[in-house]
Image (cartoon, rainbow, N blue to C red; front, top):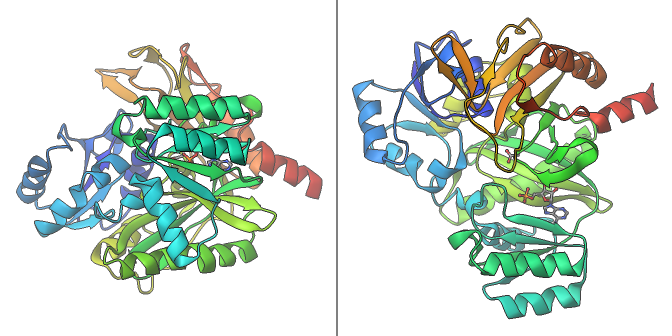
Length: 426
Ligand code: AMP
Ligand code: GLY
């Protein structure tokens, strides 16, 4: 089978690494890819916003399956155009990707299908939005409606912060994405991610994972795309998972069918485990990054079989098999991230750590002859398997400390919630 994978993050290196192990894979292209995907696939400099060019490439190379990693091409309708040209695609249509592309769309679906989520209001101008937060009080959450590269959400602990976030949104800080704002009730509880692979009608949930969104230790500092993750998240018990499948995932899949826009791809549910049970805070229409990295390290099944079944619209009989071990990944980011940072700084020994239970997935890296250079904010994902979260964490940091990159930083406490739980139960 010939596969084209779209994207250039750590998520795509993990997917490419796992696909490369499939006996069914004949050829893997990654567009545009990074310094890590170059080790397991052929990187292709395709402009993924040019759908005609991507379609031509698939025709010329007789591609059997296209896997779309990030949200932007999905929301732009790349999957629709490729399907119209007759290709099997893993990733939802433009209409179904609205689950990620519009917070208001998801809120309306939750209302229609009775899906537990935070209470909310929707506004398209400043004054009524300000009036609403003054009545509701803080803490409260302000969300730009559209895609804002993970920067459109403000968890306001004070009324002043909430008002400033609204002024910011409506003054055009997020462009069109901020023309509408969703204001949400602040939910108290632990956050966890669940991934469901859907074929339009059916779904299978994958292992659970927990991300670390804040830039610095102790969950301090600005929000980022994610600084580390681990799987499984023991806080997501089998009972809670059943509840999430029944009350959140199943009605979402059904609601999308009823609207005539079935969801085919991976549905990533961001949940908060509140005292009243799990509640949805967001949907994404793609794998989490870095959550995908820990899932791929634990997955025993052939990932191509799973992605292809979704793309072909029939997941009957697909039951993913997982290693019992915990996988944990630590993100090494360029100093300054998520603010401004330098590009092009040299990295040594990044790939020297790989072993049976350690894999360094690349995100923002590029090869410059023999040299590896940083080429983005989040740069490496040092990922390890261990019998416990503490064990996986120790192995990940041991490998990370052997990487020689003067311009990088990482959090030192990835997995702390699970490790505290392990200590308590020991
Ligand atoms: P999102 O981009 O929707 O994932 O939001 C970014 C982060 O804001 C989430 O990971 C949560 O930590 C936090 N957040 C979002 N919505 C809520 C909410 N309703 N209550 C509390 N925290 C939230
Ligand atoms: N790790 C969070 C995300 O992929 O959105």
